[in-house]
Length: 468
Image (tube, rainbow, N blue to C red; front, side):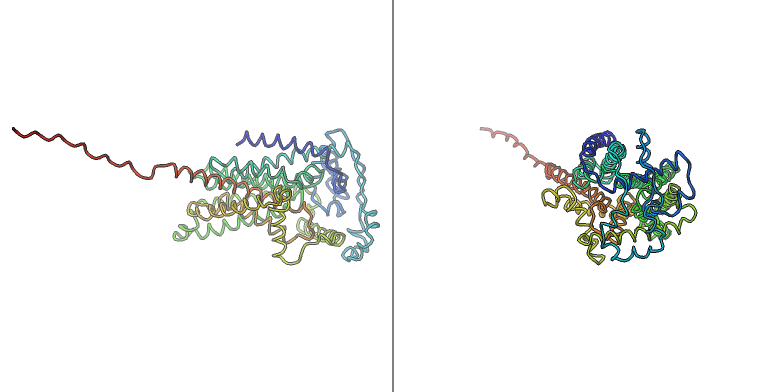
């Protein structure tokens, strides 16, 4: 599997490299490249306090890890971007008329607003330097999709599930446009899937036999690594907090099941107590390490982690209001059910390759088969600990991403469906592998003999002649 994953990375890197040279510039790239000087502030100048990390537009609008990635690449190329203005859009953050940005009327003069929010366009060499790490992280995301789907599909057809997931990701038109660009999507999605893969391995290590100190230590180490990756994902984009919520939900569920398993009659239903206790320990440790990394990478949060995280979320709501007002034609329908259906449809049909190019629900149909397969394995093997295994973790993780995206979705932009589309592609890979494996087993059973060969009748014996 490792060799195939390396091959997937190499092929994907070549494809994204070509796309990075052709895809058009987007103003969001300027929004990401200009504040990439935070890499210089933190790692080269050690500026970790006021005024650099006071409440300003840059510290409130997004978390900084993707800026570190872009800034490191620009610095490694021997380039610099324009000096960052810390007072950019200050009236939206702390101005006396800040309340007007909660009034839709403010956004009617779109041209004036765009002029006030203008950011410098980077020169071609800086833009290219900023896109290089996105090519690598996008290829790494494809490789991780292969590993996650192959891990969940399992068996001799596991590699097929991985190939389907990775190929579906690289072929999707919106992926080819978004991933090579220099903004937050590639780092966010890479760390998100890295955390998921490490978490699945931690879950399977906790369930694996024989159970002993080595197994416990391995699941705990993998749990910490998964938490670190979750923290880096949330540190790249606030949407990563949904993955942290999913891991927290898994830990809480495992803890409840472990408490139930203290009764022998319930343990026969929910699974062995030892496995359940290992599951909540590694996942809880992952949550703690994820929160620690999320805090550590963002000096803005250090003085007041809870209050300033709340301020970031509040400011993002303010920005989302502006985006919906300026793009009324893309506003999503009201109602939780409508939004969840929109997320499911866009993630499994509209955005993937077959739905977008051919109008055929290939990925959606395979994802439905994969969902049934994952749920069946998670519930069917509960007596051996599958309720806290890799399938269950993936289910809780994916559910958190889908529900969280739906509840917070205000505008129908394709970038918001990247994490849920990744979940759908993993399920599509599992579904493809399940269908092939089922067909293989069916063919094998038909070839196997069903009856034993008939016993031949005894040879007749010669009768003795009578005396004449």
